[in-house]
Length: 183
View: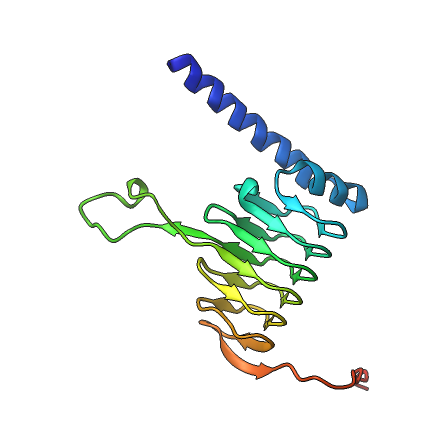
């Protein structure tokens, strides 16, 4: 029995080393290798840039044209689904599990995890430095302002920001008017 535990530990450790190697490869080759070999499921056009850490990658699914930039972390313990055409800015965290802590008679480290899946629907932009917490559903077309902490699900086409995140605007339909540079 002990030898089986050692073999499992070695296998897990080698998996961690393999993912650390894949995280460091730059450019399009790195994106392609991560998409095929890291352990998450992703469709065509998805780009996971270097230095992105994904815990429990076997529980993470990504659609088409998902863009995850440098320094992001995803914890898929409770499951993460990211639909098509989603952008996640640098340094953002998407977490689908959290420590249990309610029983003061038991050490927090021994209480396990509370897992709740995260769903990020199509056409969502999560700006830099955001935190998406377990159980959140970001509705289609949501924009999450930089630095926001999202604790509750959003309605489609809302703009949320702050800590905790709240609605600060709504996306409108109509012609695209590019902004002019400030003089």
